[in-house]
Length: 325
Image 1 (cartoon, rainbow, N blue to C red):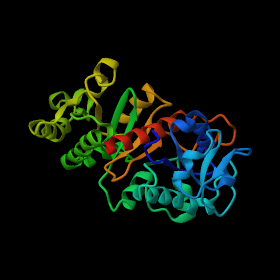
Image 2: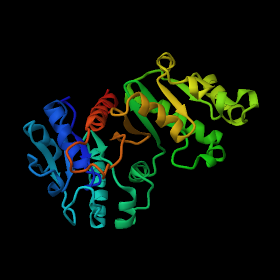
Image 3: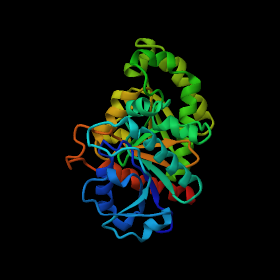
Image 4: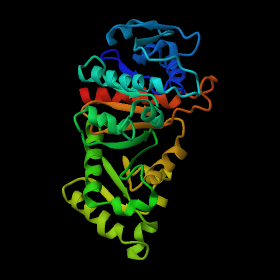
Protein backbone atom coordinates (compact mmCIF):
# COMPACT_ATOMS: atom_id res chain seq x y z
CA UNK A 1 0.00 0.00 0.00
CA UNK A 2 2.96 2.31 0.54
CA UNK A 3 3.54 2.53 -3.23
CA UNK A 4 0.37 4.57 -3.71
CA UNK A 5 -0.11 8.20 -2.78
CA UNK A 6 -2.35 8.70 0.28
CA UNK A 7 -6.12 8.86 -0.06
CA UNK A 8 -7.62 12.33 0.45
CA UNK A 9 -10.62 12.40 2.83
CA UNK A 10 -12.80 15.51 2.61
CA UNK A 11 -14.32 16.50 5.95
CA UNK A 12 -18.00 16.58 4.96
CA UNK A 13 -20.51 18.36 7.20
CA UNK A 14 -18.52 19.42 10.29
CA UNK A 15 -21.60 19.31 12.55
CA UNK A 16 -22.15 15.65 11.67
CA UNK A 17 -20.25 12.48 12.50
CA UNK A 18 -17.63 12.98 9.77
CA UNK A 19 -14.88 14.38 12.01
CA UNK A 20 -15.22 11.72 14.70
CA UNK A 21 -15.35 8.75 12.31
CA UNK A 22 -12.26 10.11 10.54
CA UNK A 23 -10.39 9.88 13.85
CA UNK A 24 -11.76 6.39 14.48
CA UNK A 25 -10.83 5.27 10.98
CA UNK A 26 -7.26 6.42 11.56
CA UNK A 27 -7.16 4.35 14.74
CA UNK A 28 -8.29 1.28 12.79
CA UNK A 29 -6.06 1.73 9.74
CA UNK A 30 -2.95 3.35 11.21
CA UNK A 31 -0.08 3.27 8.74
CA UNK A 32 -1.55 0.31 6.87
CA UNK A 33 -3.46 2.71 4.63
CA UNK A 34 -2.23 6.32 4.67
CA UNK A 35 -4.88 8.98 4.26
CA UNK A 36 -5.16 12.66 5.05
CA UNK A 37 -8.14 14.61 6.36
CA UNK A 38 -9.00 17.93 4.67
CA UNK A 39 -10.79 20.32 6.98
CA UNK A 40 -10.59 22.76 9.86
CA UNK A 41 -8.77 21.21 12.85
CA UNK A 42 -11.14 23.11 15.17
CA UNK A 43 -13.90 20.75 14.04
CA UNK A 44 -12.16 17.58 15.21
CA UNK A 45 -13.32 16.03 18.50
CA UNK A 46 -11.78 17.64 21.54
CA UNK A 47 -8.48 16.02 22.45
CA UNK A 48 -7.78 14.60 18.98
CA UNK A 49 -4.10 14.01 18.33
CA UNK A 50 -3.40 15.34 14.86
CA UNK A 51 -0.47 16.58 12.79
CA UNK A 52 -0.86 19.40 10.29
CA UNK A 53 0.78 18.70 6.94
CA UNK A 54 1.49 20.94 3.96
CA UNK A 55 1.49 18.23 1.29
CA UNK A 56 -0.23 14.84 1.05
CA UNK A 57 3.08 12.98 0.80
CA UNK A 58 3.83 14.02 4.39
CA UNK A 59 0.91 11.91 5.64
CA UNK A 60 2.97 8.73 5.26
CA UNK A 61 5.42 9.80 7.98
CA UNK A 62 2.77 10.86 10.53
CA UNK A 63 2.70 8.50 13.55
CA UNK A 64 -0.18 6.02 13.34
CA UNK A 65 -1.81 7.37 16.51
CA UNK A 66 -2.15 10.86 15.01
CA UNK A 67 -4.47 12.06 12.24
CA UNK A 68 -2.73 13.75 9.28
CA UNK A 69 -4.60 17.01 8.62
CA UNK A 70 -4.32 19.24 5.57
CA UNK A 71 -5.75 22.36 7.21
CA UNK A 72 -8.50 24.32 5.51
CA UNK A 73 -9.84 27.23 7.58
CA UNK A 74 -13.63 27.47 7.84
CA UNK A 75 -15.65 30.56 8.67
CA UNK A 76 -16.89 29.32 12.04
CA UNK A 77 -16.41 26.67 14.71
CA UNK A 78 -18.68 23.63 14.63
CA UNK A 79 -21.13 22.41 17.24
CA UNK A 80 -22.05 18.72 16.87
CA UNK A 81 -25.63 18.37 15.71
CA UNK A 82 -26.10 22.07 14.94
CA UNK A 83 -25.80 23.19 11.31
CA UNK A 84 -23.86 26.40 10.72
CA UNK A 85 -24.61 27.96 7.29
CA UNK A 86 -21.36 29.94 7.39
CA UNK A 87 -19.40 26.68 7.08
CA UNK A 88 -21.08 25.56 3.85
CA UNK A 89 -18.47 27.20 1.64
CA UNK A 90 -15.72 25.40 3.54
CA UNK A 91 -17.36 22.02 3.00
CA UNK A 92 -17.46 22.68 -0.75
CA UNK A 93 -13.86 23.93 -0.75
CA UNK A 94 -12.68 20.73 0.97
CA UNK A 95 -14.20 18.63 -1.82
CA UNK A 96 -12.63 20.85 -4.47
CA UNK A 97 -9.25 20.56 -2.75
CA UNK A 98 -9.49 16.78 -2.60
CA UNK A 99 -10.31 16.57 -6.29
CA UNK A 100 -7.39 18.86 -7.14
CA UNK A 101 -5.04 16.60 -5.20
CA UNK A 102 -6.23 13.51 -7.07
CA UNK A 103 -6.06 15.26 -10.43
CA UNK A 104 -2.44 16.30 -9.81
CA UNK A 105 -1.49 12.83 -8.55
CA UNK A 106 -0.69 14.01 -5.03
CA UNK A 107 -3.51 11.78 -3.74
CA UNK A 108 -4.42 8.39 -5.17
CA UNK A 109 -8.18 8.80 -4.63
CA UNK A 110 -10.76 10.93 -2.89
CA UNK A 111 -13.05 9.63 -0.18
CA UNK A 112 -15.82 12.03 0.81
CA UNK A 113 -17.39 12.19 4.26
CA UNK A 114 -21.17 12.78 4.25
CA UNK A 115 -22.48 16.25 3.52
CA UNK A 116 -25.80 17.90 4.38
CA UNK A 117 -27.40 18.99 1.13
CA UNK A 118 -29.83 21.51 2.65
CA UNK A 119 -27.06 23.13 4.69
CA UNK A 120 -24.98 23.59 1.53
CA UNK A 121 -27.92 25.04 -0.36
CA UNK A 122 -28.88 27.40 2.45
CA UNK A 123 -25.34 28.48 3.25
CA UNK A 124 -23.66 28.56 -0.16
CA UNK A 125 -26.37 28.23 -2.80
CA UNK A 126 -25.09 24.75 -3.69
CA UNK A 127 -26.84 23.89 -6.96
CA UNK A 128 -26.13 20.13 -7.11
CA UNK A 129 -28.30 17.30 -5.74
CA UNK A 130 -25.28 15.80 -4.01
CA UNK A 131 -21.65 14.70 -4.19
CA UNK A 132 -22.03 12.61 -7.34
CA UNK A 133 -23.29 15.42 -9.54
CA UNK A 134 -20.80 17.92 -8.11
CA UNK A 135 -17.86 15.59 -8.71
CA UNK A 136 -19.05 14.93 -12.26
CA UNK A 137 -19.08 18.69 -12.85
CA UNK A 138 -15.59 19.10 -11.38
CA UNK A 139 -14.46 16.37 -13.76
CA UNK A 140 -15.67 18.38 -16.74
CA UNK A 141 -19.12 16.89 -17.08
CA UNK A 142 -18.23 13.21 -16.78
CA UNK A 143 -21.00 10.67 -17.40
CA UNK A 144 -21.32 8.79 -14.10
CA UNK A 145 -23.39 6.27 -12.22
CA UNK A 146 -23.71 5.49 -8.52
CA UNK A 147 -22.71 2.07 -7.27
CA UNK A 148 -23.19 0.75 -3.74
CA UNK A 149 -20.67 -1.95 -2.96
CA UNK A 150 -19.91 -4.38 -0.16
CA UNK A 151 -17.97 -7.66 -0.16
CA UNK A 152 -21.22 -9.60 -0.55
CA UNK A 153 -23.00 -7.48 -3.16
CA UNK A 154 -22.67 -4.63 -5.65
CA UNK A 155 -25.74 -2.75 -6.90
CA UNK A 156 -26.34 0.11 -9.35
CA UNK A 157 -29.67 1.98 -9.40
CA UNK A 158 -30.49 3.22 -12.91
CA UNK A 159 -32.88 5.88 -11.62
CA UNK A 160 -31.99 7.37 -8.27
CA UNK A 161 -33.57 10.23 -6.32
CA UNK A 162 -36.97 10.52 -7.96
CA UNK A 163 -40.45 9.58 -6.73
CA UNK A 164 -41.48 6.00 -7.41
CA UNK A 165 -44.40 7.29 -9.47
CA UNK A 166 -41.94 8.82 -11.94
CA UNK A 167 -39.65 5.80 -12.40
CA UNK A 168 -41.50 4.22 -15.33
CA UNK A 169 -41.39 7.41 -17.43
CA UNK A 170 -37.75 8.06 -16.53
CA UNK A 171 -36.60 4.54 -17.35
CA UNK A 172 -35.59 4.69 -21.02
CA UNK A 173 -33.52 2.30 -23.10
CA UNK A 174 -30.81 4.94 -23.51
CA UNK A 175 -30.59 5.57 -19.75
CA UNK A 176 -30.42 1.84 -19.01
CA UNK A 177 -27.77 1.15 -21.63
CA UNK A 178 -25.67 4.08 -20.42
CA UNK A 179 -25.77 2.82 -16.82
CA UNK A 180 -24.86 -0.71 -17.90
CA UNK A 181 -21.94 0.37 -20.08
CA UNK A 182 -20.47 2.67 -17.42
CA UNK A 183 -20.86 -0.06 -14.81
CA UNK A 184 -19.22 -2.68 -17.01
CA UNK A 185 -16.27 -0.38 -17.77
CA UNK A 186 -15.93 0.52 -14.09
CA UNK A 187 -15.80 -3.11 -12.97
CA UNK A 188 -13.03 -3.77 -15.49
CA UNK A 189 -10.99 -0.64 -14.74
CA UNK A 190 -11.60 -0.08 -11.03
CA UNK A 191 -12.22 -3.58 -9.69
CA UNK A 192 -9.97 -5.64 -11.96
CA UNK A 193 -12.79 -7.93 -13.16
CA UNK A 194 -11.88 -8.78 -16.73
CA UNK A 195 -15.28 -10.18 -17.76
CA UNK A 196 -17.94 -8.78 -15.40
CA UNK A 197 -21.24 -10.64 -15.01
CA UNK A 198 -24.23 -8.27 -14.86
CA UNK A 199 -27.66 -9.30 -13.59
CA UNK A 200 -30.44 -6.92 -14.61
CA UNK A 201 -33.53 -6.63 -12.43
CA UNK A 202 -36.99 -6.23 -13.83
CA UNK A 203 -39.04 -3.20 -12.98
CA UNK A 204 -42.34 -4.90 -12.25
CA UNK A 205 -43.28 -7.86 -10.03
CA UNK A 206 -42.14 -11.15 -11.60
CA UNK A 207 -40.30 -9.06 -14.25
CA UNK A 208 -43.68 -8.21 -15.76
CA UNK A 209 -44.85 -11.83 -16.08
CA UNK A 210 -45.20 -11.66 -19.85
CA UNK A 211 -46.94 -8.30 -19.80
CA UNK A 212 -49.55 -9.23 -17.21
CA UNK A 213 -47.89 -6.96 -14.64
CA UNK A 214 -46.47 -4.18 -16.78
CA UNK A 215 -44.86 -3.71 -20.16
CA UNK A 216 -41.52 -2.04 -19.35
CA UNK A 217 -39.64 -5.30 -18.75
CA UNK A 218 -40.43 -6.58 -22.26
CA UNK A 219 -40.35 -3.31 -24.18
CA UNK A 220 -37.53 -1.37 -22.49
CA UNK A 221 -35.28 -3.66 -20.45
CA UNK A 222 -35.19 -6.93 -22.41
CA UNK A 223 -34.14 -5.41 -25.77
CA UNK A 224 -31.19 -3.63 -24.15
CA UNK A 225 -30.05 -6.82 -22.42
CA UNK A 226 -30.39 -8.83 -25.63
CA UNK A 227 -28.42 -6.28 -27.65
CA UNK A 228 -25.56 -6.05 -25.17
CA UNK A 229 -25.40 -9.82 -24.77
CA UNK A 230 -25.09 -10.09 -28.54
CA UNK A 231 -22.03 -7.82 -28.31
CA UNK A 232 -20.41 -10.34 -25.98
CA UNK A 233 -21.24 -8.80 -22.60
CA UNK A 234 -21.97 -11.33 -19.84
CA UNK A 235 -25.40 -9.94 -19.01
CA UNK A 236 -28.75 -11.53 -18.27
CA UNK A 237 -32.26 -10.45 -17.35
CA UNK A 238 -34.68 -8.93 -16.71
CA UNK A 239 -34.99 -11.02 -13.58
CA UNK A 240 -37.66 -10.97 -10.86
CA UNK A 241 -36.08 -8.74 -8.22
CA UNK A 242 -37.48 -10.75 -5.33
CA UNK A 243 -35.27 -13.75 -6.19
CA UNK A 244 -32.04 -11.92 -7.06
CA UNK A 245 -30.47 -11.27 -3.68
CA UNK A 246 -30.26 -14.53 -1.74
CA UNK A 247 -26.72 -15.98 -1.42
CA UNK A 248 -26.99 -18.55 -4.22
CA UNK A 249 -28.31 -15.94 -6.66
CA UNK A 250 -25.62 -13.40 -5.72
CA UNK A 251 -22.89 -15.93 -6.51
CA UNK A 252 -23.92 -15.84 -10.18
CA UNK A 253 -23.13 -12.17 -10.86
CA UNK A 254 -20.69 -9.37 -10.05
CA UNK A 255 -23.23 -6.55 -9.99
CA UNK A 256 -27.00 -6.15 -9.94
CA UNK A 257 -28.41 -3.44 -12.19
CA UNK A 258 -31.55 -2.19 -10.48
CA UNK A 259 -34.30 0.02 -11.85
CA UNK A 260 -34.89 2.36 -8.91
CA UNK A 261 -33.36 3.54 -5.66
CA UNK A 262 -34.92 1.23 -3.09
CA UNK A 263 -34.70 -1.84 -5.31
CA UNK A 264 -30.91 -1.43 -5.07
CA UNK A 265 -30.38 -0.01 -1.60
CA UNK A 266 -32.70 -2.20 0.46
CA UNK A 267 -30.85 -5.44 -0.36
CA UNK A 268 -27.34 -4.09 0.15
CA UNK A 269 -28.24 -2.40 3.43
CA UNK A 270 -29.89 -5.62 4.57
CA UNK A 271 -26.90 -7.76 3.60
CA UNK A 272 -24.25 -5.42 5.07
CA UNK A 273 -25.58 -2.29 6.75
CA UNK A 274 -22.28 -1.08 8.23
CA UNK A 275 -19.88 -2.04 5.44
CA UNK A 276 -21.51 -0.57 2.33
CA UNK A 277 -19.58 1.92 0.22
CA UNK A 278 -20.87 4.53 -2.25
CA UNK A 279 -18.73 4.50 -5.41
CA UNK A 280 -18.94 6.91 -8.34
CA UNK A 281 -18.18 5.07 -11.57
CA UNK A 282 -17.23 6.96 -14.72
CA UNK A 283 -15.03 9.64 -13.18
CA UNK A 284 -11.44 10.13 -14.39
CA UNK A 285 -10.39 9.70 -10.75
CA UNK A 286 -11.38 7.33 -7.94
CA UNK A 287 -14.10 8.45 -5.54
CA UNK A 288 -15.74 6.56 -2.69
CA UNK A 289 -17.86 7.54 0.30
CA UNK A 290 -19.39 5.83 3.31
CA UNK A 291 -22.94 4.72 2.65
CA UNK A 292 -24.63 6.80 5.35
CA UNK A 293 -25.54 10.37 6.13
CA UNK A 294 -24.35 13.02 8.55
CA UNK A 295 -26.21 11.52 11.54
CA UNK A 296 -26.66 14.87 13.26
CA UNK A 297 -28.68 13.19 16.02
CA UNK A 298 -25.69 11.26 17.36
CA UNK A 299 -22.86 13.62 16.37
CA UNK A 300 -20.45 14.41 19.17
CA UNK A 301 -21.57 11.53 21.37
CA UNK A 302 -18.67 9.27 20.42
CA UNK A 303 -20.90 6.40 19.38
CA UNK A 304 -20.73 6.74 15.58
CA UNK A 305 -19.68 3.53 13.82
CA UNK A 306 -16.69 4.00 11.46
CA UNK A 307 -17.00 0.69 9.57
CA UNK A 308 -18.43 2.19 6.38
CA UNK A 309 -15.75 4.89 6.25
CA UNK A 310 -13.01 2.32 6.86
CA UNK A 311 -14.47 0.21 4.03
CA UNK A 312 -14.68 3.29 1.79
CA UNK A 313 -11.04 4.20 2.40
CA UNK A 314 -9.93 0.64 1.73
CA UNK A 315 -12.01 0.44 -1.44
CA UNK A 316 -10.63 3.77 -2.65
CA UNK A 317 -7.11 2.45 -2.21
CA UNK A 318 -7.90 -0.84 -3.94
CA UNK A 319 -9.59 0.91 -6.87
CA UNK A 320 -6.62 3.24 -7.30
CA UNK A 321 -4.31 0.22 -7.26
CA UNK A 322 -6.47 -1.50 -9.89
CA UNK A 323 -6.24 1.56 -12.13
CA UNK A 324 -2.49 1.57 -11.67
CA UNK A 325 -2.27 -2.04 -12.81
